[in-house]
Image (cartoon, rainbow, N blue to C red):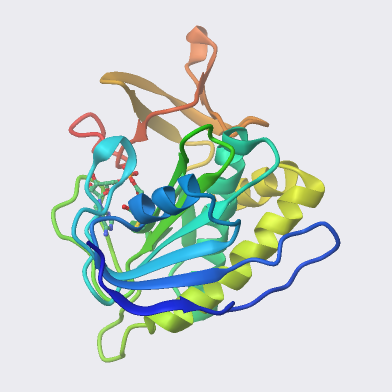
Length: 269
Ligand code: BT5
């Protein structure tokens, strides 16, 4: 059972245009297994778009394919109920919007940050290490709602992950405050979400490629245990990774794991 530090706080911010959502009704929790699970339950019960679940700690934070997400206090953990046009079909666009919004938020929070890059499909890298992850899931019963889950390492990052991790905290300075990071992300995501609704995927694709790590370089991708080596040439208009295999043509990958450059083949990340 989740413990509530407050019930339903009012809107953090609401910036909507005609036909666009006035987002964000917050449910602030202390400790919870997974904010995505909480939000999926709320969505299944009819929660409105913009229902935002946050928790100080998660005991069973999830990554893709049931992997664990290290979620100690001091980091940002949030899940947002969305009811986009197209329902679960919009999941890919929402994930790209969120990754970009996180990257922009990190730059807002750390103006002198190391390069903030994105790594397919939805990771955000700070100085080449993973600082944040995004997980979008379709909500029962019919996928009309999706839940966007975002974890950002503000204060700390786990050691020993296959793909190296980092946090925003810098020696000698306090880490960004969770509440400030939340407000910055909410603003950035709302901009990205509204823009996607007005202009579609093209701006997301362009801006994502503008910060993609390793574009034009060799890449190895693990697809359900099978390794593909090629050159990372971009993403297509649906967000699939384009891997030029040379004589084997261009392979479009919709689900998989990109390894650590030069260390690939040892473990998927
Ligand atoms: C992700 O999965 O990167 C998506 C993470 C989404 C977490 C948020 S937190 C709020 C919401 N509630 C949830 O329960 N989840 C969402 P994936 O690409 O599968 O990466 C998972 C892998 O990253 C793990 O197998 C570890 O190797 C590594 N990892 C785990 N915790 C990490 C952390 N805090 N920072 C960096 N890497 C981590």
